[in-house]
Image (cartoon, rainbow over all chains, first blue to last red; front, side):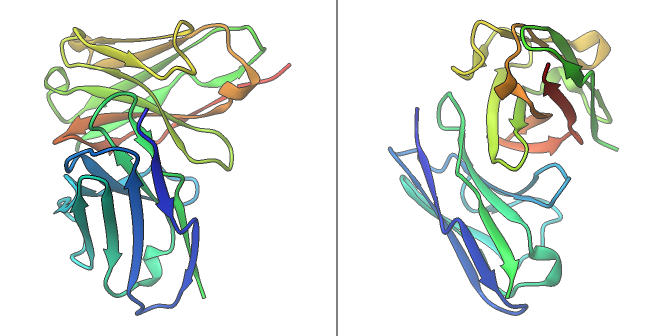
Length: 107
Length: 117
């Protein structure tokens, strides 16, 4: 199975900060990667698909980049509603695997 | 409105069985591949199973292979997960999710499964 190593596992930041989360795949996955946001008690929400495509309705402060094994999610200017846990997911092949998650907290 | 609604969760003893359902509405269910994903309390997301739109392709995580069975009824706009030989470590919120453009674009609200004696 492809291992997805996500970092950092937690992050403290302030409103207005620029934040970057990374995911590294144990083998090349082309651009078959998505980023998801999850708030406590809620289902995950798709933010980015195909590594860099913004899901409809998601604010443009979210962006994704990368291909092959290294990927990043960037939030250009943190807003109060962005404090949540973020996951990457690869669906290049089965079994589908998630990163361990990054908990983004208010500083 | 595009919507997925899970049901069927509950408390079950180790070794028991449970059948989860996921009701789809607001889109042409038969055109989409579907997945089940679970999340143990306080833990991360774990993919469980995949089924293609016409049920011709099915995959399982190793952790559930041989115990869980995914199925769908396109006439009823429903996805199912039959879970047998349940273990303590299967305790989790189970989500169904729609696949679009190689991503899980629509998720249900989740249903809690608790395996405990």
